[in-house]
Image (tube, rainbow, N blue to C red; front, top):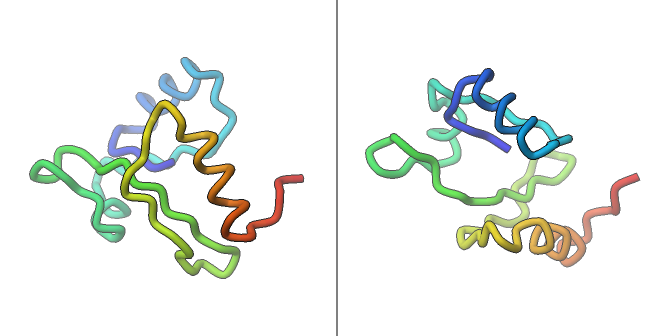
Length: 87
């Protein structure tokens, strides 16, 4: 995940969800700009999911993320794209 919030705020967010996943803080919006996801004059990032393979190649971009089903949707898309299951 990438967030425009600072590291402290992201840590609080991850802890509130008992999150066990990487969360990049991008308050300078460098990554968001590079991936073209800034919205509303740069105040927010679009909720897009990028599927990037081990070689760094973007295999798919989901521009219609449903936060209610995102976990299941990601798992299904990873399978469809042929990504190996997590060990």
